Length: 149
Image 1: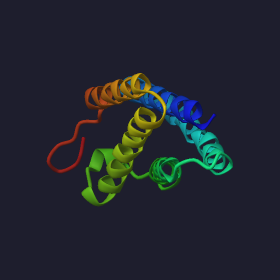
Image 2: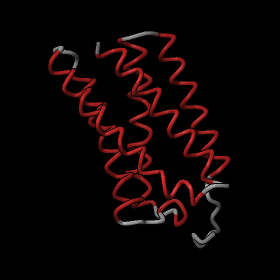
Image 3: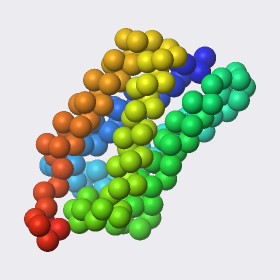
Image 4: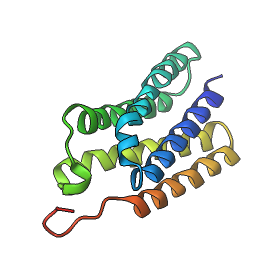
């Protein structure tokens, strides 16, 4: 049961992020009102960690779910608690841990699904990750050399 659940969580995560990236350019006020809903993925991630223990599965699931939870935590901290405009300022001290967790989280969804569930499902998640990157690049806030928009 864990493998299809992990794949579904990866699909939902990618769909959320693609949606967020696509609406932020023209509907930032809407995103600021509803963006917190993405953080609700904490609930299925914790449930997934429980499934890992119940089904006695590979520790890789726990590791990548932990990375996913760390990404959700830093997202909550930066965007919703401290309200740090780290995307606009491009401060490497804030951006580096965020990007590292973002990449590791997506890597985990692709590779673990690819290895333990289905090659086709892993390729689908890889394609969705590519779409995330493209949507992010196209809609990312622009900065100047001084870090101001």
